[in-house]
Length: 212
Image 1 (cartoon, rainbow, N blue to C red):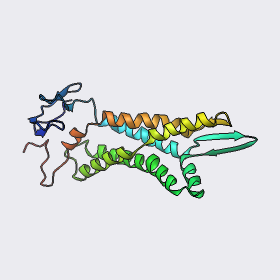
Image 2 (image 1 turned 135 degrees about the vertical axis):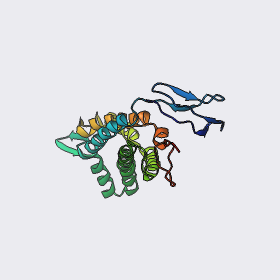
Image 3 (image 1 turned 90 degrees about the vertical axis):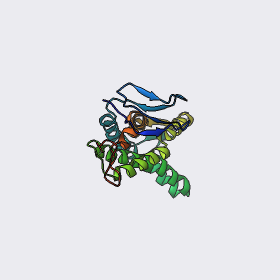
Image 4 (image 1 turned 45 degrees about the vertical axis):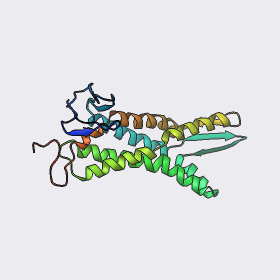
């Protein structure tokens, strides 16, 4: 499938104005002056990304609703989820930390995945409605604030530290976090925002893919 258009664009690195030709899957159009990749032909940039987004949504639900880990020490057992840990921090007075955990590990990834699903459904049949451009901007912002991988590193460090003090058993939520990190990264890699923008209808009804 060919992607791209012949509209004049400015290179993000050197500002050279140029026409970017259509590129096929596996091909890359680069700036002739600085070599910056301007367009990359990706195989099935929307259906594949949509499948990854739906899988990420399932992983996110499991990561936040299922038990993250179980602890057993001196005859006492305890288990918690991500949201359960944030709630406990709130009860203990660590309210800023609780809000940050909820935002970076739950709200931001959920907003990113939700926006991507809505956007990918909207751009499947061009021209996409104008609101798709707004949703694309929201998705890019949500992706910047999504820090599930940081949470994964924090969990691994905690496991190493408490492994000698208690019996630690990872739960379903723990095993869902790893795939969630991979799926979010795969979504960003497979998605082609330039092709999505080319399908959004403008305010005057024009869209780059039209014959006007």
